[in-house]
Length: 310
Ligand code: ZN
Image (cartoon, rainbow, N blue to C red; front, side, top):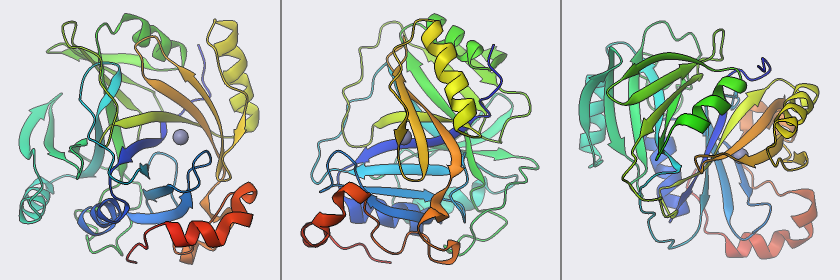
């Protein structure tokens, strides 16, 4: 069993409109945009990163806004819900706040003994808030949401699977332990994790496979401290029979990817070097940053991308 993984690093999803996406995460949810860059493979498409002040691993929600992309169809083989941690007693605030902004899918419930508010993102993205006592991660409070309510980072992701067996075994190999099973949902945890270290597996044997589109999660990334630990994980996964990509430099972290038995795309990402690699922490996310190989296209890219407010 591996011990290098500490929880989630980031979740990457797709959206249909960059400006709507930017507004929702910065203004409605109060996260900080920590990087404005482009997709490595399609430099005409933004890659937007939202998180805490520094974009700490376990807080980073990232998006590829493909203009006018059709919405995805929810199903199995995907992350169905991305869950954020909020302070105890703040559900009422969020429920009112999101209702005022005409958010859809609002539903309060209690699961695993936790108070939870489900809601949908601009493209029908499956989100929830869960109240967590004593989450000591520092929130970003300059986005208009105060310390009493602000998002602390991820709490978990929930994956929808036709069968959770092989994915559950894989997660255990990656260092997760089964914590509890309730109402057909298996919860796994990493002892001593980074705060974003819970995974829920929902088994839906009769639901067909998701069709990805706007509002769908593209992949989920797990955090390791550095490149050395990443290589240890890569070797262990390959020795177990997984097809893992070579290490890819993503400018703000190094990444490896592999498809899991349940259909979800996993990434293992390093905590180094971080988002202040090419801009000061005080100005993260303000300027358009381009991967070196696309820098010569800057003027074309700048003309093509729709400007984002703030
Ligand atoms: Zn990623």
